[in-house]
Image (tube, rainbow, N blue to C red; front, top):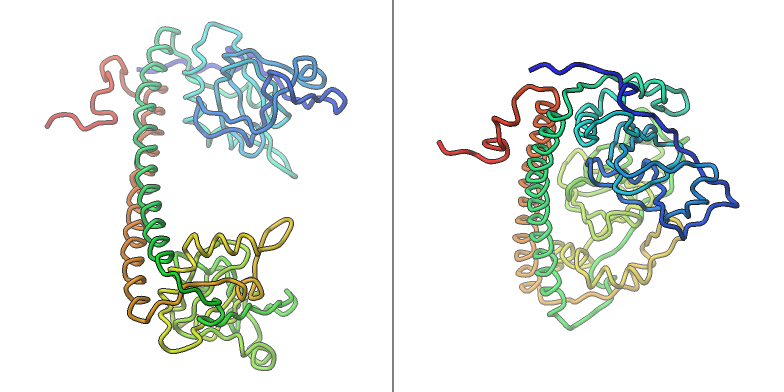
Length: 406
């Protein structure tokens, strides 16, 4: 079936957002005040991170739209949509579509969600992109009769709800595998009571501070934090340094095969290993810390296990510094204490940790793939339903999110 196309202005009144004046801004009221950052990407989900306004405060420099309106983010990110479940105020990064005719707002919400890329393409601007009121009101949408709108919206509400629940369950499965892995790591580490300073087990060396003026188009790779990828040190996002300057100033920082790197400002507890020969000889940038064993019988996989443990996290959390981005360095690591079991026990702990960490990583990868497939199916389902590509009354939900009988 083919649905007629109408401009949104034929169906809705477009209302611009605003910001209450500072003297009227009172966050203790009952009117939520939304911004583009509050949208989740789902039609029925919006999390208001800002406090609510009083009605007088909301009206001063802003507007209130009634429950059952469509709220659209018209600055980055453009094209996110939600149905307002209560009266709501919003800033200049949003515009509201208030029904001006008999419509089912859910139907048009789903349609705009499915056509997010088209809405984004309507954005204009030099400093930042914005979807103007004129372009939004001129945007053409499929507009079947009201009864058909309701039928499609009811169908999509049920089917997307099933898909969303499946996605949540897949995400929970991944989370449970990660929780189990963390519990096994923690129990293995904390069952050993003999503690020594971590500096007795490994040596720490932070990469040098290098100015951007020293960067070259080629030469010796300078490893950045982007190069720490899934437990391995890579050349992703690296800069380059002059080989002669490296030989004179920074040769002591050259990476060796088997070196471990951690970041003192991000990826807390994440350890990456130098396995790629192409990385050998590279220089880690400041903020990246090289770890090397102090003696030959130290199992560095055991050290990785300790650095992923809650025992390490608790200690480093108390020691790390920085107002904006908290970070740590060799000075902090030297104050950390770690269990030092026998080499055989180190190996056993590392082996058990590797098994659960690999299992958790496999679960995460599988669930990510399943969630991506469900997300794709969700978009295709919405698009097909709101454009009349199939009759939802005939579909009845069968074979849409579940496999029917063979």
